[in-house]
Length: 243
Image 1 (cartoon, rainbow, N blue to C red):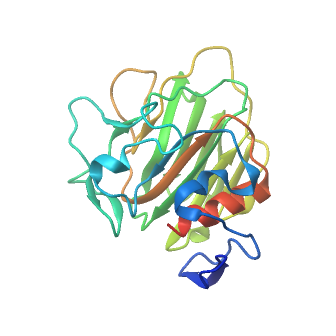
Image 2 (spheres, rainbow, N blue to C red):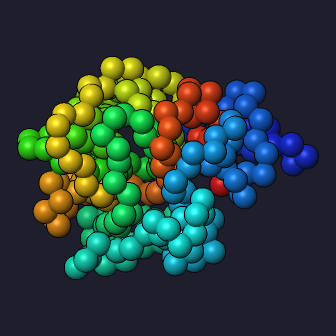
């Protein structure tokens, strides 16, 4: 069990995290969790658990009205509750489009707080732009392992490394599970394009189809146009997990 200190509000316990904040201070968590660690490069932040409504969970809290989420055409709205966030299952998948198109120079970062990942092939978010699986910006559970993409695709970590609640992060060529570095050598992008990021599935080659649906609960997600440090990943992850 990890205890996270909030100034003037005692201790927040996060069961199952097993890692994360240690002595990382958290200030104004609900208001600016995506800015913890002195970060000012967030281009989209979505508070899902604890949102005021399903519609509120779609709003980009870092810049409302820009990159607000929308249900992918032909799909249904996710099941949502304030206690659990988006609850994605085979019967009711979370399939959302962001409008975000990642840069092709490994300068972006992303953080996702997820719970109860139950499927062996479960895409947290993703896009890939060059056949067969290059120019990838994605996180995915794949046959018991964790796949990461910020350019090339790389496997690092297994489901055994995951806890009940997980903070998964990409930062340039680096990947983190619950604040701990699991990869530092994700391969660079190739020539070609990237496409908009889907939440709950991959967006393959911008075909308008989806690939690799996510099964579990979403609590928060954020995307950044700088490479976060490990300390910043830990600070933002701790704040997001405490929502």
